[in-house]
Image 1 (cartoon, rainbow, N blue to C red):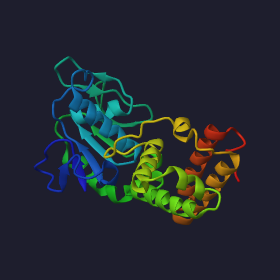
Image 2: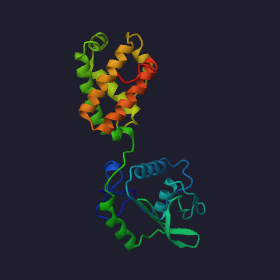
Image 3: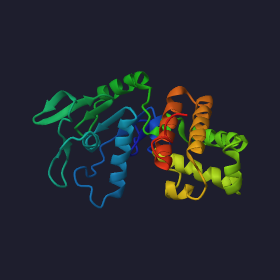
Length: 269
């Protein structure tokens, strides 16, 4: 699915930005809309659009911009923005971009990886055709956060739920949880929220706010408990997730174990 930042009657397959997660889109279109690019003070919607463009680029989503859309694309890539206040703005050539043609000092047509820009307000048909033809070869995506790397909230929640099911049966860890956790659904929700926040967050979830050490104070947790926790967490992650995702969760858990119990507690059991 192609996403667009403003209506495009001539692109029947284009849907409004936000219809699907940007990382799952076929591509992102930034038409000329005459909006500001260099000075976005007091422009929250414009800031949000710039953030979306940056996120799309980070996830390797193909982006085509023209007119002010090309200038916004250039800004997302770190280019300097030129043009009179209230007049047509354009982006200098971003670092690492390839200019294909110029209009005086303006880079009229440039590309940067999967980013394609045409500085003029009217997009030539051949640029459109070339962009659409390239999309099948640009279908892969780069995760935008560690949370996406592990498979998103569903994959993470599955690991958390299975881990605690095993922990409650563990002879060392089970009694600790039995003594201090009365509402298991609420506990699983809090722990999942903590991990979601730790791994980069999710727009649909309220971030976890708290203090890791304070949350574990008074539980009687010692080094042996932390080592058992880490070993069980790693086993659960490797049973449920691909190796790279399990490695990521295990590394984060070891770092957390170090914070809770000192350097020796964070070592692999």
